[in-house]
Image (cartoon, rainbow, N blue to C red; front, side):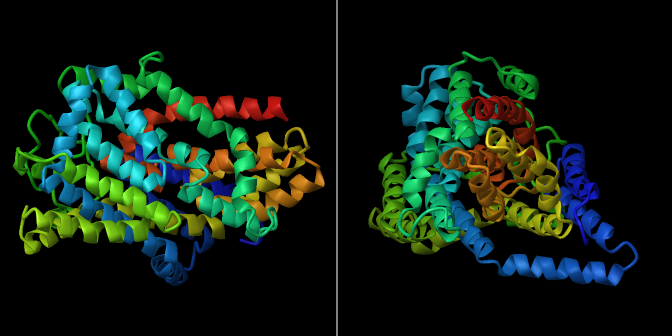
Length: 479
């Protein structure tokens, strides 16, 4: 396209409609991408196919995608080991002894999410997997669990200056001359008090966990169903029978894996059913502590921390003679396979984002909001514009990287409060990460908590919008 226009909004609308209608986020993203390419090449089918192929190949060659595949697959392998050795089961039992009801179990989930602040992937995958049997015991819906997990993923990581988010965004601030070399984290830290959305999202989830704020909208329906013993949209055990005590309706549609490939997805629920009943708590805590410790040791590099943890976990389990090495490798491969739906969703989201970029969607939103960008209104407008873009494209880090060169010169030109503007940008990224139906954080929170992706996204969206609305008003008042 030669210039930005309103038609660039069509693909995101198509994605949202298909995702809600069919509950198939991968299919929705592919349809949205194809719809966008049809707008670019309405009479050139060969050009459309060539462009789609080029974009898809470029995404698969992207360093971020390669990193994500390794991290997600590695987490799946580690979680499978924790389950197969009954370490996760032992942790669930220990946690269940401390939890005495719905409030305490949800609050424990929140506290665990705050403790694992290093990375939102680590948070989303480990907290849900560790706590879902505790919350199941007290008839809490998987949707509520996923919301608690998602609300302590990106929002917590954003406001902690030693997380992967802080490292990445601090580097971007230096790259764009917003901070002096070596001062990226310091400038980032100055903006933390002004990251209104993460603070409000965390406050809201505390109120929900303690039952001070009741379940609303679709979440109320999910909670009532769980309390009646018929939970809805629980992630199905593909190729296996449902775990005891879980009614999974035929229409729940938890994954996008084709029927012919169902054998490729190993059921972690079945692993729990088959796990030894005498699992030791140390077989969960030692690997998790190693993961956190090595991630910090390698300058908040989750992949390096994960690789070292996997190697040492294998040695730790071998020393205890829990299983042969060949069995451990098979368990790890099966765990890797369980992450394929999540990995495919994020890959499809990256393809869709590239199509939106070709349609000049970011430029359209920014250009239409630029006239309202005064020193007083700039933070609120920046938050609104970037939140819309992040929500529409499923990109959190990418939108921040694209918007800094545009927003920050404008902020200096109108003499806006720089930490406040940075806080608005980070708030928008956090909102997009949590609220978007197909963002990596949302996908992994649903995966780790064992519920349908679209069901998780729909049930938590009202809470995200409440926090976002309050943040928007807050940016206007503070400026």
